[in-house]
Amino acid sequence: LAAEAAIADKVPEITAVTAQTPAYYSLDFDASKNYTEEALSVNGTEVKFRAYRHVVYVANPQNAESQYMNIFIPAAYFEGAKINGYTKETAPIFMPNGVGGYMPGKAGEPLEKDNMAGGGANSSLIALSRGYVVAAPAIRGRNTIGEDGKTYVGKAPALIVDYKAAVRYLRYNKKNLPAGDTEKIISNGTSAGGALSALLGATGNAKEYNPYLAEIGAAEARDDIFASSDYCPITNLENADMAYEWMFNGVNSYYTAMWQLQDLESRGQNVPGSKQRPAGPPPKAIDADAANNPVASQQEVQMTSDEIAISKVLKEAFPAYVNSLKLKDENGQRLTLKKDGTGTFRDYIAGKYKESAQAALNNGTDVSSASWIKVENGKVTAVDLSAYPAAATRMKAAPAFDKLDLSSAENDEFGDIYNTPKHFSNISKHYEQKTGDMANSEVIKMMNPMNFIGKADTAKHFRIRHGALDRDTSLAIPALLALKLQNNGVDVNFSVPWGRGHSGDYDLPELFDWIDSICK
Ligand code: DHB
Image 1 (cartoon, rainbow, N blue to C red):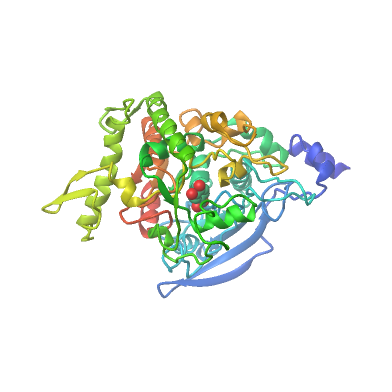
Image 2 (tube, protein in one colour):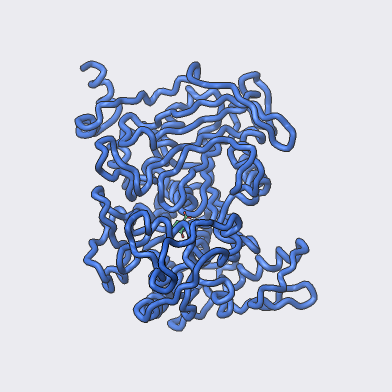
């Protein structure tokens, strides 16, 4: 009883949760036990580190297998040595999340060979080799089930609540951590994980999340971070359908990714185009290079007349949204769209593709296969944005995210504890085909970093990447994020790598050079 009272003192609103969740995990990190000494190598150089695995980061997890982190500390810091100019007091803390597809994220591990990082060492191992502490949390996702074996406990906003709880745990244990500067926490993620990383960066200490943090017994500490690294963030979900049609309207067929087909099948949803292709399951093989080769091993599917009709509605709604943001470019010029979708914001997007192609040319990359750009004497002289969508191809039918039949990964992400999917945008709710509820408006708000920039303790530094071939979301979406951050005084490093599709961690040396440049 005394112990329970002590817990209740520390963690507000714990009683309701303890009723179903008797398990209690200490929030105090004990560095003296439960670790192993390990070594891996990067380019023939040995990297020694101490590994603390399975550190549950909340007092009352709803699923203890999803709410823990792995902490890795370079061995040199136990011997008083320096690495890359960092000491145990100044070492930044690299905090990658493994979320993809809004599914549960696994806790990261340093790896010598990782497909995502082009077959070489992964981000956690590179981080250790460069003297960073790595804190890699597992995160609940849209199919995470609670300790009762029935309820879905990982729907929105669980993923951001967990990431914040992990940050709070580190800060709360500042004195117990053998190394690492908790004022230099850098998040990293790709796709849904990139969106999550952006959300963590944008929403530091925002009070909206407090009830959710209290519910799982998160430590009482700040959750703002120093910097956020976001690869191809699938973010700003309630506006992403409009952005997608602003870009892809007029292209009336699409190539669904294999992971989406498998995800739809696993949830008993309709598989698009199943009537258009021979009977039988969709091909299972995922082309190893599918992310950078969009149409590899995918089936072309024609959009229906309803999908074509809603594409137009969404496209025409986008300018009002862009204009409502009142954004400016680096030179102070207002970025707006006219009713027909043209305007300075469209020119800005064309300019990002132009920079991308020019950077590729400067590196000696052949860009001649891209029919939508014009090159004269080694200079990109024009970008035809209207020809880009057909060349890049469409990946998703309209609406891309909030599906009228509630079938998308995002509808599932906004679903309830009984696994019923929900809408999250007004247009889809209006034109819906199934009787679906709208997700709670506070939850929709809490999933979008755009709502918190300039209103919370937003990270001072962001690095955002979106590949020039990526059509999982429109380039407009990461661009709006970058611009809104920039317009609010955040230091933003945003670019569009040529030849890249929907992937991340492909430029780790540059990523860590950037982190070093802001930390040192
Ligand atoms: C991811 C990709 C998508 O196209 C999407 O809609 C959601 C998530 C991902 O790879 O995480």
